[in-house]
Length: 235
Image (cartoon, rainbow, N blue to C red; front, side, top):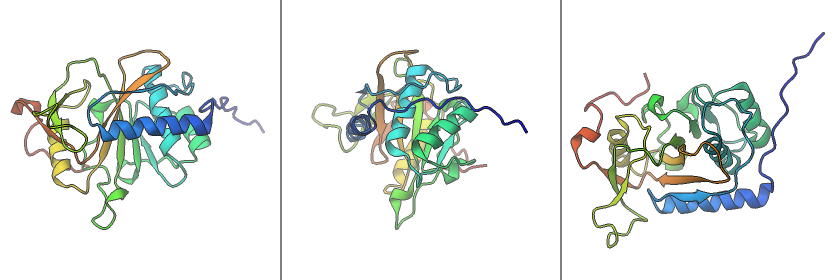
């Protein structure tokens, strides 16, 4: 009886403990300073995972997963990242279950933001346990001209940025900032987002930026928003 030959498992971090600590510190800085690009230079090799995302961006997505995911954090992968080798890689290194729907995910890895589900498809937490919400880790082009908004809130100095921090990565869906306003209105419930720069095709580092649920985003013009009144729930 023949057995299917699985591809070899790629290594994770070169130094699992120290690299995960460095990645976690970068994540903390990104989430404490919303909209500010932070350099992440501990990238595991992931070129053979078969996902249609630039390799340095994919390395950044995986680095974050290696840092925050474990057996107690269900992960959802979008179509750009959901490959058999990617699933095997995450299960081997993180032990995380891969779920079929975004509503069950603690973390969601998203390689194509324009096709991502609306925010209402993800867990927003519960009044007694707001920490049981989802965190979205999204590939986005930091160099492209996106639908720029002014981000304000904890971590952004009103003295240095009286109108807010300009932030608008490319490749986001037209409705993103409208849904973000809806997400912010539900605080302390709501999702958090970490963006990973997709502008570099290869390299030894990648930039990340955080958008915690406590941050407000004001569009300079209403046209920045998607169509008003669209259903944000999972269809």
